[in-house]
Structure formats: C-alpha cells, structure tokens
Length: 401
Ligand SMILES: [Mg+2]
Image (cartoon, rainbow, N blue to C red; front, side, top):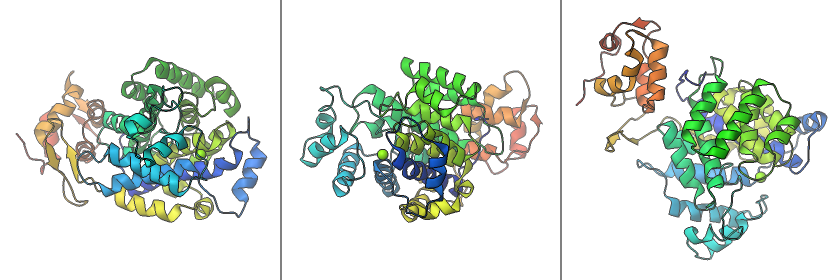
C-alpha cells in the first residue's frame, strides 16, 4: 500500500529516470495511432535498433540537470529553468515537440520573459497540454513531502503552461511520482489510498472526477483501449495524465507491463508511456527493467549519471518552521529530534497504543520529512503502548527544542 513507506534507494531513483525514458522511446514509433497491436509492440521490443527518445526525455533531462546543479533548499529557479528548456529545444528541435511549445520556446530564446511567452499560445489562455507533466518527475527526487512535490511540479510547469490544467497535470504527475518512489514494492499497492493522496495534493474538481474514473477503471481491470476511450489519449493534460496513472495502477508491480499498457492506449503513446513508466520505475526500481531494452536506450549513460547525482544527497531541506536545517551527507544521521517525531506520530496514539505500521502511516499523513520517516523505519515490528517507548529503539535521536 502507499502508506507502506520505503527508503528511496539509488535503484528507485534510476528506475524513475530509466522507466520514463523507456516508455518515451518505446512508445514513440506508435505515436498518433488510435490503438496499438500487441504483436507490433512485441516486434519493436525485440528490434536491435537504438531506442531514440523524444521531447519528453529531452526536457526531463533538462529539469534533472537543473535540480542536480542546485544544492540550495528550494532547488528550483524558474527563470533559469525557462531558459534551459528553451535551449534544449533549440539544440534539438527535431525531437517531436508539440505544436504550442516551439512558439513559447522561440519567444523565450528571443528574450521575451517566460511570464509573457507562456501566455502567448492558445488565444492567450496558455497551454493545457501534457508537456509540463511529461518532464516533471525529477522534482519528486528532491521533494521532502507530497505537497512539496506537487508545488515544485506546478512551479516547473509555469514557464510553458500558464493554463491551470497544464499546471495541475504537472502537479499530479509529480505527486504520483513522489508516492510511487516512496511506496514499498514488497507490499501490495493500496490503489484507493494512492488516489486519495493524489486528490489531497491536486485540489481541482476536474482532476478529482478523473481520479474517480481511474479508480473505477482499475477496479474493473479495464483494457487499454477502453481506458483510452474513457479518459482520453490525446496531448492535453487532463486527457493523458489520468490514462498514464491507470496504466500504472493496473500493473503497479510490473514496469514493462505498465509501459505496454500505456502504449496500447494509443494516441500520444510516447508521452503516456513515459509518464506511466516513470511511476512504475520509481516504485519497482531499475533492476526490474529489461537489460536488453535499457542497453538500447540512447540516453542511458546520461540518466545513470543524473541518478548518481540526485540519489541520496539531500543537502538542505526546509523544515516545517521554515528555517533551513542542514541535513546529510549520505552516511551521517540526519537531524531529526524526538519532539519532531512526537508531533508527526502522536495521531497514531490517539486511542492508546499503536503498531509500527500505524506510526509510519501517521508520519506519512503528517507529511513528515523524508529523513524523519526513514528514522522511524528503524523501529522493530511491534505494538508500542506509549510514544516514549519509541526512544528505547531510537537512543541516538536527540530531544530537540
Ligand atoms: Mg514526445
């Protein structure tokens, strides 16, 4: 279930990046088809050719590099990011960019501020396409809570997607990637809980209606074609992000199956498969991906390098009080205090005792920082009569202020 917290390993970070790139490159030859035959897809998987990525991965690489270069608490400089996206487009305009984006990037490259450029498309309404959602996943690697992931996702969308649907799509995919990354593949995924968590992160009626449809489709084991019909498979954010989500929630434990499902939904197959592959890769890790396919991926080396840079190196995280707390090198114990743990888990003890799982669930509901949740992972599996009993197992955690 979602609430079963797992540590974010290097394998999961790499899985998020490679899963997305694999979905993109494998889906690209099928883009625009109303539906995709399983035999055609199998032939593509067996082919010896290089798997060439499209705009989805090109802009994901730009965002991942942006985050890897910044070690401050916020990590996201939207002004710089707008220029970096526009530069990525100028360097490789042949990567299959959608209709509105080159116009926005052209304006940014010509010196128009992104705040203006992003509104210059679709009769001034701005883009509600899936272009911000398709590139957003790396923000989940630096976010310290579900809401932080959604917020970073939304901000990373702003330079190109001024329409709220475009921004909500990015927030949704970022939050889903965060949940997938922190889910434990050793336990079944609780789909209901996953969608409830997403609904908390994306507060928008049209999105909540889509989440209800996703729940229904996954419950009924809908086929890809049916899902595409029910939710859409186009380049709009509302017409593709929920379809990718359905692919993942239908096969949460099998990344290759997730990607196949997404491609078989047809339409904007590369982007839908990129988003779906990202989620499954983040949950299941890179080791579950086909080595033969990964070795064909054009950007594999670059993605490995970025995973090395982004995995396990949170340098500073903003605390709940808004001060910046110095955290970690990989091996040092992060600065979590007993008082912070009490605040995060006291809800679990409301009716008396609490199990380790209830304590972990309470910390997730509280959206406790990742390092606090990781500290709680050290507790043995048992029932605790009182919150003070935790200290027997966490003797090194200081009291705090
Ligand atoms: Mg594409």
